[in-house]
Image (tube, rainbow, N blue to C red; front, side, top):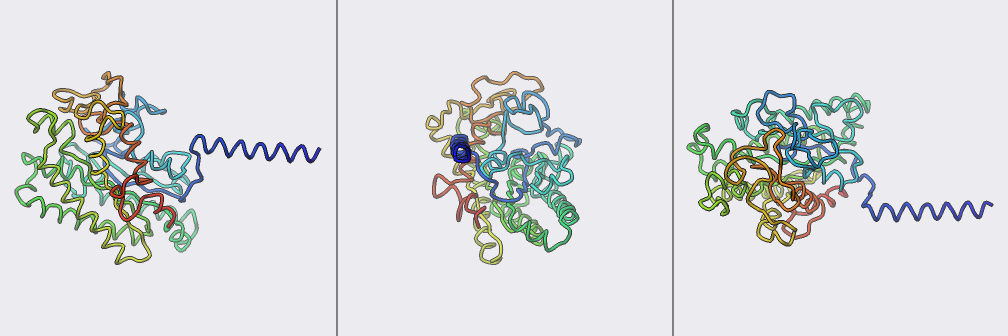
Length: 365
């Protein structure tokens, strides 16, 4: 009888292993994941704010199991995919609703319309800037100290966690390239403006480091000049990307990559990586058929030329073939694109996807 039980036990173990391989299940690789960013990764922090930048209504979330949550997508965002790849069983909760011991798994602080600069996105109403998100992180750290009992235990715990930061898009979309509302483009050349942004970005990174953070994934800007919004406003044929915007984005990205090298050289107990979202996105729009995309310049829902005048209207019927669209609305990618970017952030498919290595290797450090 005992031999039969052992045999069945072995069969069950093998069966579970095969299931985990088939469905991609993996052990959780880090204790927590903290997320900073804007609407590309916001998952509900703007829902209760007095803001025009909200996505807690249909058709947003039409392909997400919980429906509309505040995610600016038809489904998952890139950080949802990264969390899955890291082995988290649940998505990281927004700061607005994270409570109790749930914060031990990480918190999402991202806020739609937020930027590195304080004034960025002000025409859209309330939002939580990078500095505000960092203050919220500091509050979370204080709560973790209370849960774990002392600062040394907390510091050891936080040193194993990953932070991803995806900010800067609005500093261009809703600041520098909006001269009717902001004076930054009159004050600074693109080179000077990128320097100002990186200087302010650096200050926030130092605060995060001083509050226990040790593993950083800095995510670069995508090709903002290829979004339906910019194509509708500034592209003569509605297809050709706006190069002056993309060039400015590349200047920022080059400096952000250099910042990673600088921090790795100056903080030996910390690890910084750069995710080349610009390059991954360029791969998608230059070889769309290779990834199953047939539409690279029009929002799946929206209004006006390229569906790029405004974001999706409440209860608007979106396109049906969403997996074939690069863009969900005037600014944001579809879940199909987010899955590709999230997975290539986790495991680089090209040497240029991540520097000096990808998120999977960061988790192992």
